[in-house]
Length: 109
Length: 113
View 1 (cartoon, each protein chain N blue to C red):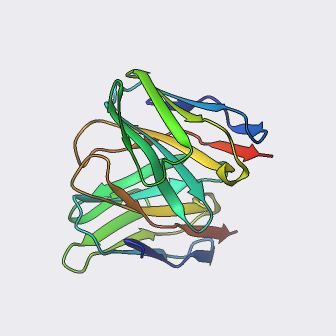
View 2 (cartoon, each protein chain N blue to C red):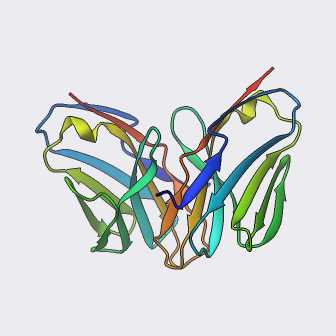
């Protein structure tokens, strides 16, 4: 049983397209994290949110606490956005994270 | 620029060897984590440390141990490496408490032959 489910698993888009990655979770959370992992392995934190919506450049993250669902949107996608995007639900203690298996995004020029 | 540094990007070891993976952070974080990442399984927590000399087992601690003698350094030890420990290993750190951003290292891709 996975506490965090992401969809789609793989996504290919044309440059300029609007992209949505979805994350559903089944546990109570203190926050929801979106992470980005480029080829080579390093992971970067994109967003941490516990309600509403956050925006950073072309990236937007939203969360609906009642529905236990979060989305990551990328506007005007670019090949440099190609990466694996990981959703992580943070529990109520400082060490409890539930990770999705990631969405592999490829943006074609 | 904040940084979590893992000692090796790529490592090849023989079955039965004792393997040390080192992680150093320069942000004075209390929490440090070791994860392994395998295709289709996502990140799984091996061990967590919330202070010097303090550690807690994660979801998959079997075959691993850890050491945290200094606040900035968290070591993962494979006592006797086996082929099923071939994986990507990621270290992370954060301040104590909830809703704090985690910072990750670049990862160590370990192959056990």
